[in-house]
Length: 235
Image 1 (cartoon, rainbow, N blue to C red):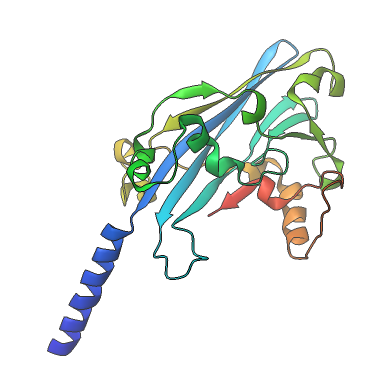
Image 2: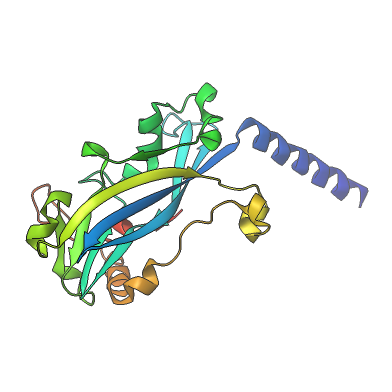
């Protein structure tokens, strides 16, 4: 029994050392989209979590910092069967949600910068190449009806009463472990990662899950095809 206790103590000390030497830095941000339709502002948002995990580089192929993400796209219901979705991608850049904040604050993943990420604060409007890809489905039961739309062409795609107003990002508290896992108390739990797109477009998500089980090759000039990772990531 004494030997087992010593082994457990050694393992515990080893794990504690690894946690201190190779910590994980977590931050949350909220993406919000506002679209005007028929004289009313339709708005929705999604809280995304990014974890920066320092790793032991026992091989050159292992990155010094692994970036993990949890979050989902922003679905805006415009009524009358119309919808706009802000995806978790920008063009072909599927890493868009991982590096959006780092790019805005001009921060690298160097040791002196990693600890800054959980303390970042502020809110800014997305413009130009900071904007993600926008999408609409003409049929919310069929992922093949997906159509990529530019923010400036909503009036053409829908009608003159539909206009993109703005999209912005706001840094929000990530909370403190284990309260952020428990979700209570709110002051320590932070802003929870959004979970809801499966209820908003259940049939689309179901079909994309089935599609994800098979390998699908895509060439650079192929037309857009909806993919599960564009709508949610569970890191």
